[in-house]
Length: 124
Image (cartoon, one colour):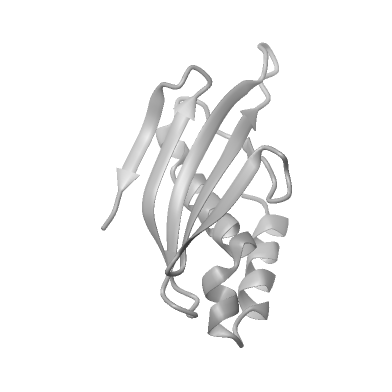
């Protein structure tokens, strides 16, 4: 992940500190956290260096499930110089420790363009 993305994450985290409900229900922050969890597992994928569709992209969906829990779904594209771009999807469920800066990954699944599961991680 580049420095700009890390800076954006830090700004979002710091600006939502005052109201616990804002942090708990903040879909953009949930997206950024899910993206960080995905980025931390890219070394387990056959192809690395993919770009995740942005928060406001039509290829990204963030759903608030209640109780500070969010489901994030997005498309990942890896540009390959010799071949067509490689597309993957990831789905993550992240949970905020009500109003705090602590987030936990509850579920992560990455699939290739054919629907083959590349990574599955479940945490309770």
